[in-house]
Length: 331
Image (cartoon, rainbow, N blue to C red; front, side):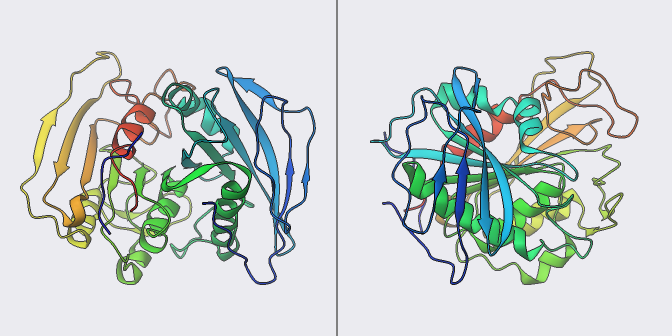
């Protein structure tokens, strides 16, 4: 499968006995496609306007388990036009609405014209202590993609996934197992769980971007075990080498120091790019020297936190993620 620059179908997959029941809280400005016969939609006036677009909280019942997610629709959304979709996964104990606030992804989406889904994990974690995702969460993500394809005019060739911390572990699992549906990936403050090292065999080259802090105490840059869950993880350099090998990248690294925009955040960003990869894919690493555990440009964290360390203000994580994503589409 070859990647190409995007140019300016709905697909329905039934999950056996899975029952998809969508309860959508929608404002009148939301325009939705007709749901499939396997979905029932109930609307209410509890949507909220964010950055001129609309973000709503929706429930999705899969095999009797109720999950939920926040969905942001930009003002430019037109149900007649295929629209890119970005999935954003929170870290352990997080929530989708907080991810929207801390990442500022909605502002980027409103300007660039893509939809953002912020799924909520059913429990505290997407990925368990053994380093592999909770099975029901994987089924949820697959069902969520199908539901969004039915209720929004999502471009099936331009679906992307980004996650932070535990959500970044999940993102890499999806890169291993759902690269036929998702075009590109970004993992922030998350190296590769050792459990995925042997089982990961994506059917195609996987464009992936990694962002990590050298002083991350929760998901250590040098690998070992993540704090809290104790998941066995590779180091960040080992993780990058893993994805380079999967993509058979042949070029030497192109590294450059990015401008130290904020002299008070105690960080310096180095961007490393690996090209010459199969099917025009690419592996990119943002090394946050002195950085801790978190999303660069986090709008909710204005100063260093004892547990999570320094957050870089030299780059906007969401801007960098989208710049990477928009280069790729499935074909």
